[in-house]
Amino acid sequence: MCCGCVETIVPVPGCAGFCILLLNIFFPGVGTMLSSCMGRDGFVPVQCLIGILQLILTPGLIGWIWSIWWGCLIMSKSDNSGPRGGHYSRA
Image (cartoon, rainbow, N blue to C red; front, side, top):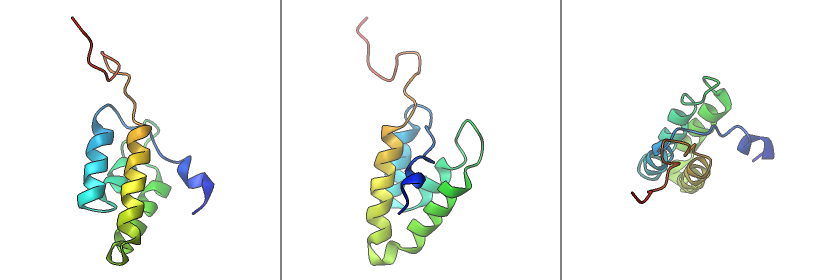
């Protein structure tokens, strides 16, 4: 896989990163394809293509493992800049 592909991961808002990870665990590639539409700059075709490849390669387990890893990357880049910064605050 090319190093430039990792740079195409779009930061998704808040807890959407965790939801995308769950989707990628149970439905490989679907979360990646969904995240390709959630970027601030609009649709990211490379992300969608990666999701399709993950889905196609799932029967050989390569796509499933790749999808979980990609979901973790998406979650780590998720934008947690909400009102509380993505963390619980003490009142």
